[in-house]
View 1 (cartoon, rainbow, N blue to C red):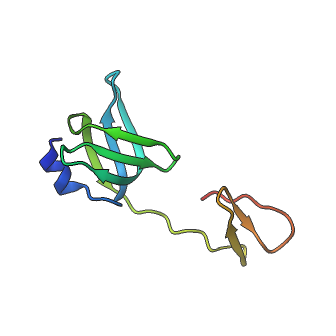
View 2: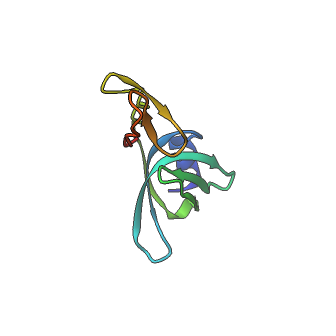
Length: 100
């Protein structure tokens, strides 16, 4: 993709799937948010696994917008608390890890 295509298709805080070619020539697929697009067209992409990717415009193959799942509010009828690392059920004293 060139920088004009990137500025048309991608915007800051867009959630989606980025496909780019790494330095070994392999295609890398990652899901997350676009954090910043520079004037030269390079993209700072923040993956859902908390990994930052800095990808140059000529290495980007495609970007697809995806829908982000809503945040979990309750589990089996009881409210859920997010402690920063995992989701905890507050119904009992047991800690129940929930996948985000």
